[in-house]
Amino acid sequence: METIKKHYRSIITMITLILLQAIAFAQDSGGTSSSSTTTTTSSSTTTIQPWMWVVGAIIVLIIIIALARGGSKDSSVIVTKEEKIRE
Image 1: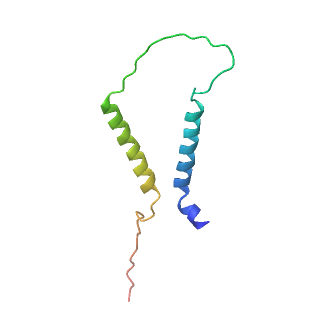
Image 2: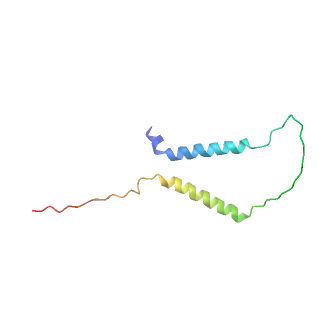
């Protein structure tokens, strides 16, 4: 139970990514249909520039690093108070 509490964010992130993959695969139109089909052709070309891939990869890395470092408890601040004792 303690390990689940320690890795709560990682588990939630993993489950979210699995669900997003399932949604992406569900949209795949690879299946065949038994009903009549109508074919129409339209051509639209979308070209993604290489710099967009680099920017996207950097954003994903920043998100992963933020999730990995966000749960650390080593960054807490300890404040101590000193009092003078009168003699």
